[in-house]
Image (cartoon, rainbow, N blue to C red; front, side):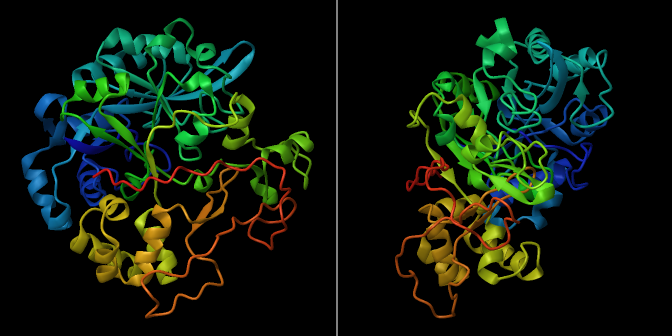
Amino acid sequence: MKFIADLHIHSHFSRATSQDLVPEMLSVWAQKKGVKVIGTGDFTHPGWLEELREKLVESERGFYRLRPDLEKALEALVPPSCRSATRYIPSGEISCIYKRAGKTRKVHNLVLMPDFEAVAKLNDRLSRIGNLRSDGRPILSLDSRDLLEIVLEISDRSFFIPAHIWTPWFSLFGSKSGFDTIVECFGDLTDHIYALETGLSSDPFMNRRLSALDPYLLVSNSDAHSPAKLGREANLFETEMDYDRLLQAMKHKAGFEGTIEFFPEEGKYHLDGHRKCRTRLYPEQTGKRKGLCPVCGKPLTVGVLHRVYELSDRKIPCGASPFWSLIPLLEILSEVLDCGPSSKKAVALYEDLLARLGPEIEILMRTSLDDINRAGGPVLAEAVLRMRENRVYKEEGYDGEYGVIRLFDRAEKLEKGRPHRFPERELAHPPVTLFASPCAGKTKADSTLPQTSPSIPRRTPFL
Protein backbone atom coordinates (compact mmCIF):
# COMPACT_ATOMS: atom_id res chain seq x y z
CA MET A 1 0.00 0.00 0.00
CA LYS A 2 1.21 3.50 -0.83
CA PHE A 3 0.82 6.11 1.87
CA ILE A 4 2.29 9.37 3.17
CA ALA A 5 3.66 9.65 6.73
CA ASP A 6 4.57 12.74 8.76
CA LEU A 7 6.30 11.49 11.89
CA HIS A 8 7.52 14.69 13.58
CA ILE A 9 4.84 17.09 14.81
CA HIS A 10 3.90 18.82 18.07
CA SER A 11 0.92 19.17 20.41
CA HIS A 12 -0.74 22.09 22.16
CA PHE A 13 1.54 21.36 25.13
CA SER A 14 4.62 22.65 23.28
CA ARG A 15 5.69 26.28 23.41
CA ALA A 16 4.68 28.52 20.51
CA THR A 17 2.16 26.07 19.10
CA SER A 18 -1.51 26.26 18.17
CA GLN A 19 -4.17 25.27 20.68
CA ASP A 20 -5.80 23.40 17.78
CA LEU A 21 -3.08 20.73 18.00
CA VAL A 22 -5.42 18.11 19.42
CA PRO A 23 -5.98 14.59 18.02
CA GLU A 24 -9.27 15.56 16.38
CA MET A 25 -7.94 18.55 14.43
CA LEU A 26 -4.77 16.68 13.54
CA SER A 27 -6.95 14.04 11.94
CA VAL A 28 -9.01 16.64 10.06
CA TRP A 29 -5.93 18.28 8.58
CA ALA A 30 -4.16 14.99 7.89
CA GLN A 31 -7.13 14.02 5.74
CA LYS A 32 -7.21 17.38 3.98
CA LYS A 33 -3.51 17.10 3.26
CA GLY A 34 -3.59 13.45 2.22
CA VAL A 35 -1.29 12.25 5.03
CA LYS A 36 -2.27 8.77 6.19
CA VAL A 37 0.12 8.24 9.13
CA ILE A 38 1.19 10.91 11.61
CA GLY A 39 3.36 10.89 14.68
CA THR A 40 1.57 11.92 17.85
CA GLY A 41 4.38 14.29 18.83
CA ASP A 42 5.20 15.27 22.42
CA PHE A 43 4.59 11.84 23.98
CA THR A 44 6.85 12.73 26.91
CA HIS A 45 4.30 15.22 28.27
CA PRO A 46 2.04 13.53 30.85
CA GLY A 47 -0.98 15.66 29.93
CA TRP A 48 -0.64 14.90 26.22
CA LEU A 49 -0.11 11.18 26.83
CA GLU A 50 -3.27 11.11 28.94
CA GLU A 51 -5.20 12.88 26.17
CA LEU A 52 -3.87 10.47 23.55
CA ARG A 53 -4.84 7.45 25.63
CA GLU A 54 -8.34 8.87 26.09
CA LYS A 55 -8.98 9.65 22.42
CA LEU A 56 -7.03 7.00 20.50
CA VAL A 57 -7.62 3.26 20.25
CA GLU A 58 -5.38 0.52 18.95
CA SER A 59 -5.75 -0.12 15.26
CA GLU A 60 -4.36 -2.75 12.96
CA ARG A 61 -0.73 -3.87 13.35
CA GLY A 62 0.66 -1.40 15.85
CA PHE A 63 -1.02 1.82 14.75
CA TYR A 64 -3.58 3.89 16.63
CA ARG A 65 -6.67 5.73 15.37
CA LEU A 66 -9.32 8.03 16.79
CA ARG A 67 -12.18 6.49 18.72
CA PRO A 68 -15.04 5.67 16.30
CA ASP A 69 -17.38 8.23 17.89
CA LEU A 70 -14.79 10.98 17.39
CA GLU A 71 -14.13 9.93 13.80
CA LYS A 72 -17.87 10.08 13.10
CA ALA A 73 -18.21 13.53 14.68
CA LEU A 74 -15.46 14.92 12.44
CA GLU A 75 -16.92 13.81 9.11
CA ALA A 76 -18.66 17.15 8.49
CA LEU A 77 -15.29 18.96 8.72
CA VAL A 78 -13.66 16.93 5.93
CA PRO A 79 -14.76 16.96 2.28
CA PRO A 80 -15.94 13.50 1.13
CA SER A 81 -13.15 13.56 -1.49
CA CYS A 82 -10.54 13.63 1.31
CA ARG A 83 -11.97 11.27 3.92
CA SER A 84 -9.63 8.56 5.16
CA ALA A 85 -9.07 7.22 8.68
CA THR A 86 -5.84 8.69 10.08
CA ARG A 87 -3.30 6.45 11.78
CA TYR A 88 -1.05 7.57 14.64
CA ILE A 89 2.39 6.43 15.84
CA PRO A 90 3.69 7.43 19.30
CA SER A 91 6.46 9.98 18.70
CA GLY A 92 8.25 12.72 20.57
CA GLU A 93 11.04 15.23 20.11
CA ILE A 94 13.52 15.62 22.97
CA SER A 95 15.97 18.50 23.40
CA CYS A 96 19.33 17.35 24.78
CA ILE A 97 21.57 20.12 26.16
CA TYR A 98 24.86 18.94 27.62
CA LYS A 99 28.62 19.43 27.74
CA ARG A 100 30.88 17.32 25.53
CA ALA A 101 34.58 17.93 24.80
CA GLY A 102 34.49 21.32 26.49
CA LYS A 103 31.61 22.59 24.37
CA THR A 104 27.90 22.99 25.06
CA ARG A 105 25.90 20.72 22.76
CA LYS A 106 22.27 21.29 21.88
CA VAL A 107 20.77 18.46 19.86
CA HIS A 108 17.12 17.64 19.14
CA ASN A 109 16.21 14.00 18.61
CA LEU A 110 13.02 12.34 17.39
CA VAL A 111 11.96 9.07 19.04
CA LEU A 112 9.31 6.60 17.81
CA MET A 113 7.90 3.98 20.18
CA PRO A 114 5.71 0.94 19.41
CA ASP A 115 2.94 1.59 21.96
CA PHE A 116 1.85 3.73 24.89
CA GLU A 117 3.09 1.15 27.39
CA ALA A 118 6.64 1.59 26.10
CA VAL A 119 6.13 5.36 26.15
CA ALA A 120 5.12 5.24 29.82
CA LYS A 121 8.25 3.27 30.68
CA LEU A 122 10.45 5.75 28.79
CA ASN A 123 8.76 8.69 30.48
CA ASP A 124 9.33 7.13 33.89
CA ARG A 125 13.07 6.95 33.17
CA LEU A 126 13.28 10.45 31.72
CA SER A 127 11.24 12.02 34.55
CA ARG A 128 14.13 11.20 36.89
CA ILE A 129 16.40 13.36 34.72
CA GLY A 130 14.26 16.42 33.99
CA ASN A 131 10.82 18.00 34.20
CA LEU A 132 8.63 16.47 31.51
CA ARG A 133 5.69 18.74 32.33
CA SER A 134 7.56 21.94 31.48
CA ASP A 135 7.09 21.62 27.71
CA GLY A 136 5.84 19.21 25.07
CA ARG A 137 9.42 19.10 23.82
CA PRO A 138 11.32 18.70 27.11
CA ILE A 139 14.83 20.02 27.67
CA LEU A 140 17.00 17.43 29.39
CA SER A 141 20.59 17.62 30.59
CA LEU A 142 21.24 14.32 28.88
CA ASP A 143 23.84 13.33 26.31
CA SER A 144 22.26 12.28 23.00
CA ARG A 145 24.23 9.04 23.13
CA ASP A 146 22.81 8.29 26.59
CA LEU A 147 19.28 9.12 25.48
CA LEU A 148 19.68 6.63 22.64
CA GLU A 149 20.87 4.00 25.12
CA ILE A 150 17.82 4.52 27.33
CA VAL A 151 15.46 4.32 24.35
CA LEU A 152 17.03 1.04 23.21
CA GLU A 153 16.79 -0.40 26.72
CA ILE A 154 13.09 0.40 26.89
CA SER A 155 12.20 -1.26 23.57
CA ASP A 156 14.01 -2.99 20.74
CA ARG A 157 11.12 -1.82 18.54
CA SER A 158 11.92 1.84 19.10
CA PHE A 159 13.39 4.07 16.39
CA PHE A 160 15.72 7.04 16.94
CA ILE A 161 16.18 9.87 14.41
CA PRO A 162 18.43 12.92 14.89
CA ALA A 163 16.06 15.79 14.10
CA HIS A 164 16.51 18.57 11.48
CA ILE A 165 20.24 17.81 11.48
CA TRP A 166 21.51 21.10 9.97
CA THR A 167 19.68 23.86 11.83
CA PRO A 168 22.20 26.15 13.57
CA TRP A 169 21.00 26.14 17.17
CA PHE A 170 19.64 22.68 18.01
CA SER A 171 20.86 19.84 15.83
CA LEU A 172 23.45 17.16 15.16
CA PHE A 173 25.44 19.26 12.64
CA GLY A 174 24.28 22.70 13.81
CA SER A 175 26.86 25.47 13.46
CA LYS A 176 26.22 26.81 16.96
CA SER A 177 26.30 23.67 19.09
CA GLY A 178 26.55 20.51 17.01
CA PHE A 179 29.15 17.98 15.90
CA ASP A 180 31.05 17.39 12.67
CA THR A 181 30.36 13.65 12.48
CA ILE A 182 27.64 11.24 13.59
CA VAL A 183 30.15 9.05 15.45
CA GLU A 184 31.31 12.08 17.41
CA CYS A 185 27.77 12.43 18.74
CA PHE A 186 26.66 8.82 19.29
CA GLY A 187 29.95 6.98 19.76
CA ASP A 188 29.61 3.25 20.30
CA LEU A 189 25.87 3.35 19.58
CA THR A 190 26.17 4.89 16.12
CA ASP A 191 25.17 1.61 14.49
CA HIS A 192 21.69 2.08 15.94
CA ILE A 193 21.14 5.24 13.87
CA TYR A 194 19.51 4.39 10.53
CA ALA A 195 17.87 7.63 9.44
CA LEU A 196 18.49 11.38 9.59
CA GLU A 197 15.91 14.16 9.30
CA THR A 198 17.04 16.78 6.78
CA GLY A 199 14.92 19.69 8.06
CA LEU A 200 13.16 22.44 6.12
CA SER A 201 16.34 24.30 5.08
CA SER A 202 17.95 21.40 3.21
CA ASP A 203 16.87 18.68 0.81
CA PRO A 204 18.31 15.24 -0.06
CA PHE A 205 20.27 16.63 -3.02
CA MET A 206 22.23 18.95 -0.71
CA ASN A 207 22.81 16.22 1.88
CA ARG A 208 24.24 13.82 -0.66
CA ARG A 209 27.33 16.00 -1.01
CA LEU A 210 28.56 14.20 2.14
CA SER A 211 29.74 10.64 1.55
CA ALA A 212 29.55 10.09 5.33
CA LEU A 213 25.75 10.18 5.02
CA ASP A 214 25.61 7.45 2.36
CA PRO A 215 24.62 4.68 4.82
CA TYR A 216 21.69 6.66 6.19
CA LEU A 217 18.14 7.10 5.00
CA LEU A 218 17.13 10.75 4.69
CA VAL A 219 13.65 11.44 6.03
CA SER A 220 11.57 14.62 6.07
CA ASN A 221 8.79 15.70 8.41
CA SER A 222 6.77 18.86 8.95
CA ASP A 223 7.75 19.64 12.57
CA ALA A 224 4.27 21.18 12.52
CA HIS A 225 3.37 23.77 15.15
CA SER A 226 -0.20 24.00 13.85
CA PRO A 227 -2.46 21.42 12.15
CA ALA A 228 -2.44 23.32 8.84
CA LYS A 229 1.34 22.79 8.58
CA LEU A 230 1.01 19.00 8.48
CA GLY A 231 2.61 17.41 5.43
CA ARG A 232 4.67 20.43 4.37
CA GLU A 233 7.45 17.83 4.47
CA ALA A 234 6.68 14.13 4.67
CA ASN A 235 7.74 10.60 3.72
CA LEU A 236 6.44 8.28 1.01
CA PHE A 237 6.06 4.59 1.80
CA GLU A 238 4.92 1.58 -0.13
CA THR A 239 4.51 -1.16 2.44
CA GLU A 240 1.87 -2.76 4.62
CA MET A 241 0.11 -0.61 7.19
CA ASP A 242 2.16 -1.98 10.04
CA TYR A 243 4.41 -0.25 12.59
CA ASP A 244 7.21 -2.80 12.28
CA ARG A 245 7.05 -2.82 8.47
CA LEU A 246 7.33 0.96 8.47
CA LEU A 247 10.44 0.76 10.66
CA GLN A 248 11.93 -1.97 8.49
CA ALA A 249 11.39 0.21 5.42
CA MET A 250 13.43 2.96 7.07
CA LYS A 251 16.13 0.58 8.30
CA HIS A 252 16.63 -1.28 5.04
CA LYS A 253 15.44 1.35 2.50
CA ALA A 254 12.99 -1.13 0.97
CA GLY A 255 9.46 0.23 0.81
CA PHE A 256 10.63 3.80 1.39
CA GLU A 257 9.86 5.66 -1.83
CA GLY A 258 11.15 9.18 -1.18
CA THR A 259 10.20 12.43 0.47
CA ILE A 260 8.10 15.55 0.06
CA GLU A 261 10.24 18.64 0.57
CA PHE A 262 10.10 22.36 1.10
CA PHE A 263 12.17 24.22 -1.42
CA PRO A 264 15.15 24.47 0.97
CA GLU A 265 15.63 28.17 0.21
CA GLU A 266 12.28 28.77 1.94
CA GLY A 267 13.64 27.35 5.19
CA LYS A 268 14.47 29.98 7.76
CA TYR A 269 18.10 28.95 8.21
CA HIS A 270 19.16 28.28 4.63
CA LEU A 271 21.72 31.09 4.19
CA ASP A 272 24.00 32.84 6.67
CA GLY A 273 22.81 36.13 8.03
CA HIS A 274 21.91 38.56 10.74
CA ARG A 275 18.19 39.20 11.06
CA LYS A 276 18.55 42.35 13.16
CA CYS A 277 20.55 44.02 10.38
CA ARG A 278 18.44 42.46 7.59
CA THR A 279 21.60 41.01 6.08
CA ARG A 280 22.07 37.61 4.43
CA LEU A 281 25.17 36.16 2.79
CA TYR A 282 26.35 33.16 0.84
CA PRO A 283 29.01 30.96 2.49
CA GLU A 284 31.97 32.45 0.65
CA GLN A 285 30.86 35.96 1.51
CA THR A 286 30.68 34.97 5.18
CA GLY A 287 34.21 33.55 4.98
CA LYS A 288 35.60 36.75 3.48
CA ARG A 289 34.12 38.67 6.40
CA LYS A 290 35.40 36.18 9.00
CA GLY A 291 31.88 35.30 10.08
CA LEU A 292 30.99 38.86 11.14
CA CYS A 293 28.01 40.91 10.08
CA PRO A 294 29.12 43.63 7.62
CA VAL A 295 26.63 46.06 9.22
CA CYS A 296 27.16 45.74 12.99
CA GLY A 297 30.29 43.58 13.22
CA LYS A 298 28.68 40.92 15.41
CA PRO A 299 28.84 37.17 14.60
CA LEU A 300 26.50 35.98 11.88
CA THR A 301 24.26 32.96 12.25
CA VAL A 302 25.90 30.39 9.99
CA GLY A 303 23.17 28.66 8.01
CA VAL A 304 22.51 25.22 6.59
CA LEU A 305 24.03 25.76 3.15
CA HIS A 306 27.29 26.92 4.76
CA ARG A 307 27.51 23.85 7.01
CA VAL A 308 26.78 21.54 4.10
CA TYR A 309 29.63 23.07 2.09
CA GLU A 310 31.88 23.05 5.15
CA LEU A 311 31.44 19.32 5.82
CA SER A 312 30.95 18.05 2.26
CA ASP A 313 33.55 16.02 0.40
CA ARG A 314 31.83 15.92 -3.01
CA LYS A 315 31.24 18.59 -5.58
CA ILE A 316 28.51 16.54 -7.22
CA PRO A 317 25.79 15.00 -5.01
CA CYS A 318 25.59 11.23 -5.33
CA GLY A 319 22.77 8.82 -4.60
CA ALA A 320 19.94 11.25 -3.78
CA SER A 321 16.68 9.35 -3.36
CA PRO A 322 13.54 10.58 -5.13
CA PHE A 323 11.98 13.71 -3.71
CA TRP A 324 9.33 16.21 -4.71
CA SER A 325 9.75 19.92 -3.88
CA LEU A 326 6.31 21.38 -3.21
CA ILE A 327 4.83 24.73 -2.22
CA PRO A 328 1.83 24.62 0.16
CA LEU A 329 -1.37 25.11 -1.80
CA LEU A 330 -2.49 28.11 0.28
CA GLU A 331 0.82 29.85 -0.53
CA ILE A 332 0.24 29.23 -4.23
CA LEU A 333 -3.31 30.58 -3.97
CA SER A 334 -2.02 33.61 -2.10
CA GLU A 335 0.23 34.50 -5.03
CA VAL A 336 -2.36 33.69 -7.69
CA LEU A 337 -5.12 35.69 -5.96
CA ASP A 338 -2.79 38.44 -4.71
CA CYS A 339 -4.00 38.14 -1.12
CA GLY A 340 -2.81 36.66 2.17
CA PRO A 341 -2.72 32.86 2.56
CA SER A 342 -5.15 33.08 5.49
CA SER A 343 -7.54 35.49 3.73
CA LYS A 344 -11.17 34.48 3.25
CA LYS A 345 -10.68 34.45 -0.53
CA ALA A 346 -7.72 32.07 -0.44
CA VAL A 347 -9.24 29.78 2.18
CA ALA A 348 -12.57 29.60 0.30
CA LEU A 349 -10.85 28.57 -2.94
CA TYR A 350 -8.65 26.11 -1.02
CA GLU A 351 -11.69 24.37 0.45
CA ASP A 352 -13.44 24.36 -2.91
CA LEU A 353 -10.43 22.77 -4.64
CA LEU A 354 -10.24 20.06 -1.98
CA ALA A 355 -13.94 19.32 -2.38
CA ARG A 356 -13.58 19.08 -6.16
CA LEU A 357 -10.17 17.47 -6.58
CA GLY A 358 -9.23 15.67 -3.36
CA PRO A 359 -6.42 16.09 -0.81
CA GLU A 360 -3.89 18.89 -1.12
CA ILE A 361 -0.78 16.80 -1.72
CA GLU A 362 -2.54 14.85 -4.45
CA ILE A 363 -3.47 18.13 -6.14
CA LEU A 364 0.10 19.39 -5.97
CA MET A 365 1.73 16.15 -7.14
CA ARG A 366 -0.69 14.26 -9.35
CA THR A 367 -3.91 15.97 -10.38
CA SER A 368 -3.96 16.75 -14.10
CA LEU A 369 -3.42 20.34 -15.13
CA ASP A 370 -6.67 20.22 -17.10
CA ASP A 371 -8.60 19.35 -13.96
CA ILE A 372 -6.82 22.10 -12.02
CA ASN A 373 -7.60 24.53 -14.83
CA ARG A 374 -11.30 23.63 -14.72
CA ALA A 375 -11.48 23.89 -10.93
CA GLY A 376 -9.22 26.89 -10.29
CA GLY A 377 -8.45 28.57 -13.59
CA PRO A 378 -5.49 28.76 -15.98
CA VAL A 379 -3.27 30.88 -13.73
CA LEU A 380 -3.46 28.28 -10.94
CA ALA A 381 -2.75 25.49 -13.45
CA GLU A 382 0.30 27.37 -14.70
CA ALA A 383 1.48 27.95 -11.13
CA VAL A 384 1.29 24.22 -10.33
CA LEU A 385 3.09 23.37 -13.56
CA ARG A 386 5.95 25.74 -12.72
CA MET A 387 6.23 24.28 -9.23
CA ARG A 388 6.34 20.72 -10.58
CA GLU A 389 9.08 21.72 -13.03
CA ASN A 390 11.02 23.64 -10.35
CA ARG A 391 10.74 26.88 -12.32
CA VAL A 392 10.51 29.19 -9.35
CA TYR A 393 11.99 32.41 -7.96
CA LYS A 394 13.79 32.02 -4.67
CA GLU A 395 14.52 34.58 -1.97
CA GLU A 396 16.46 32.58 0.59
CA GLY A 397 15.68 32.42 4.30
CA TYR A 398 18.32 33.25 6.93
CA ASP A 399 18.76 33.65 10.71
CA GLY A 400 15.19 32.68 11.61
CA GLU A 401 13.50 34.45 8.68
CA TYR A 402 11.61 32.22 6.28
CA GLY A 403 12.50 32.60 2.62
CA VAL A 404 10.01 33.31 -0.14
CA ILE A 405 9.33 31.06 -3.12
CA ARG A 406 7.46 32.74 -5.95
CA LEU A 407 6.11 31.29 -9.16
CA PHE A 408 5.73 34.48 -11.18
CA ASP A 409 7.94 37.48 -11.80
CA ARG A 410 6.72 40.54 -9.96
CA ALA A 411 6.24 42.33 -13.28
CA GLU A 412 4.34 39.45 -14.86
CA LYS A 413 0.74 40.26 -15.63
CA LEU A 414 -1.79 37.67 -14.43
CA GLU A 415 -4.67 38.69 -16.69
CA LYS A 416 -7.94 36.84 -16.90
CA GLY A 417 -8.30 34.74 -19.98
CA ARG A 418 -4.56 34.16 -20.26
CA PRO A 419 -3.65 30.97 -22.16
CA HIS A 420 -3.41 27.74 -20.18
CA ARG A 421 0.37 27.73 -20.61
CA PHE A 422 2.38 30.94 -20.38
CA PRO A 423 5.21 31.69 -22.84
CA GLU A 424 8.39 29.78 -22.02
CA ARG A 425 11.27 31.86 -20.72
CA GLU A 426 14.30 31.48 -18.50
CA LEU A 427 13.70 32.35 -14.85
CA ALA A 428 16.52 34.09 -12.95
CA HIS A 429 16.93 33.73 -9.19
CA PRO A 430 16.89 36.98 -7.22
CA PRO A 431 20.42 37.90 -6.13
CA VAL A 432 21.51 38.12 -2.51
CA THR A 433 21.77 41.42 -0.66
CA LEU A 434 24.92 42.07 1.34
CA PHE A 435 24.39 45.37 3.11
CA ALA A 436 20.70 46.20 2.88
CA SER A 437 17.39 44.57 3.63
CA PRO A 438 16.72 41.46 1.53
CA CYS A 439 13.43 43.13 0.70
CA ALA A 440 15.15 46.18 -0.76
CA GLY A 441 16.57 46.63 -4.26
CA LYS A 442 19.04 43.91 -5.23
CA THR A 443 22.55 44.06 -6.62
CA LYS A 444 24.09 41.20 -8.51
CA ALA A 445 25.85 38.70 -6.24
CA ASP A 446 29.39 37.54 -6.92
CA SER A 447 29.01 34.90 -9.65
CA THR A 448 31.86 32.86 -8.18
CA LEU A 449 30.00 32.22 -4.94
CA PRO A 450 28.58 28.74 -4.37
CA GLN A 451 24.90 28.55 -5.16
CA THR A 452 22.32 26.17 -3.77
CA SER A 453 22.15 22.97 -5.79
CA PRO A 454 18.78 22.90 -7.55
CA SER A 455 16.37 20.19 -6.50
CA ILE A 456 16.03 17.30 -8.93
CA PRO A 457 12.73 17.65 -10.80
CA ARG A 458 10.48 14.64 -10.13
CA ARG A 459 7.87 14.42 -12.87
CA THR A 460 6.48 10.96 -12.02
CA PRO A 461 3.69 11.18 -9.41
CA PHE A 462 3.90 8.92 -6.37
CA LEU A 463 0.23 8.62 -5.47
